[in-house]
Length: 300
Length: 318
Image (tube, rainbow over all chains, first blue to last red; front, side, top):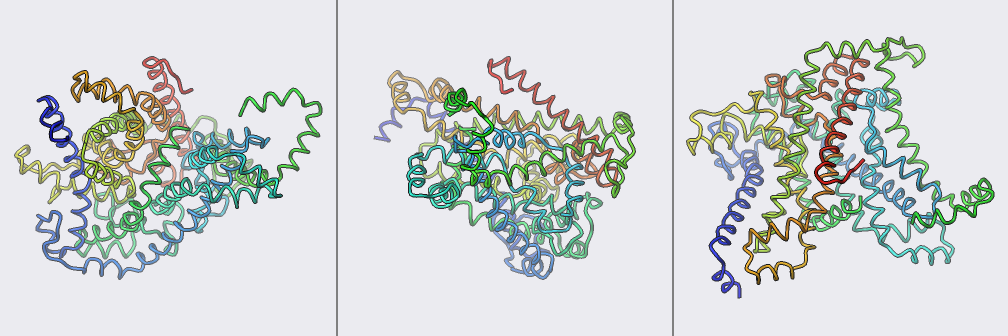
């Protein structure tokens, strides 16, 4: 069948196919190669790497670069804090977004219009960097862990994605729960939450990735607080230290030491350490986020 | 849903008592919503109050009423600063370039991907293309800097081996390349992700349309032009609206991470300018004035884009 079709294909269609496959190949290589290259360099002997020519596999395999970076306390602390903020931030974010989504999905809720307008406006309203910085300072959140979780707790977009999912559930479920004597909170917790799992999985991924990848809050509010440093921030310092931007970061021992040992291999090793957790998670959640993305954008 | 509430309204004789009766009935819903209204008030609306700082000589530690009012002094300072106009130009340039590239390229990629007949290959390419979206800008900037570096950077190596250039280009040190690098980085990072919605839209087009076209002898290119593109028109319009809405968040993350002192004249956005010259030097009032101006620019951008958009499609988002 397929062969017949191909044979019947005209010249223009064959050229079309050729262009399509060529373009797809270029895009795939352009996306994948940089990651493989970084991976190869991170496993390659650092003095050998300087000679160049490493492509997608290490020439002189070694774990030394990883041993080097894990010897720094900043990295261990950063790892712990990053994991912690990802777990707590995702959990709190999920609970608050789904709660709000539930109340907003209830067309009988009389505060609905006000709450949803108030929330939707937050997507466009922003005081800017400095008023926000002053606010955090006045709330005495500087140098605390809460600064990682509280200011970004609710995202209107996430709320609307979950709400449109709840809207798709039959309302009869809630009514029958009510007849059984359940209050609104019980309905949310026992009925809605279990049924919203696919949407929650999508939002959990967004929140987790956002938390894991954040570094600006560390830079602004906890830059000099070693106990609350994050992995991304440590990587940022190392990467910035060897570019000409050196005056931009607040220098600390780790950076200076790392700049002395071949910075490139070490940089690449940290890059891999920072990236791997996400690489492990995202293929498993792919089918959810594809659905979630589509749903969220069509409705909003 | 809205129709229900409007039909109920005329019955309300004593709105006050009705409201409180309903309020008691819905106390759990209120308990679930009110904390977040308060949260949004504190973290989204309160910073707007901070805009007052731009008109005061803000000194930390003093209360709002003890601050000295200076009127438009900081705005005058702003308009006399050459760096400000640089930052403004860069912000405008990078927003517009980002909007155009970030909008058009995902559509092309989605159409190309849809034409891949081998399902395994299609899924593989798709999975790979999402990858950069999930890494942070810190990681992305590190990788991009490495790829563009003069010693053993992949891009320079490739160009050299193809004899397109005779000596390595110092990508990260040339200001006039910076806007392009930021835009290309954004495309590299987000194209796959932005393609998801278009692919979903394409898969919603009925296969019988393609079947009929094939019977009529339409070539693949003609099918793309006459079936696929019109089929995702609605999605394209929605996404254009969304990306116009995103013009507001220009930010500074990419520029901060990819920029350096050598390209500062091209890398400094308004937000970065506020960070460096407001926060960095403790000039909070001056920095707030920049933030305010940034918001004004965002709104103007949004209305301009919307205006152009309205002319072309006769639809509006505002």
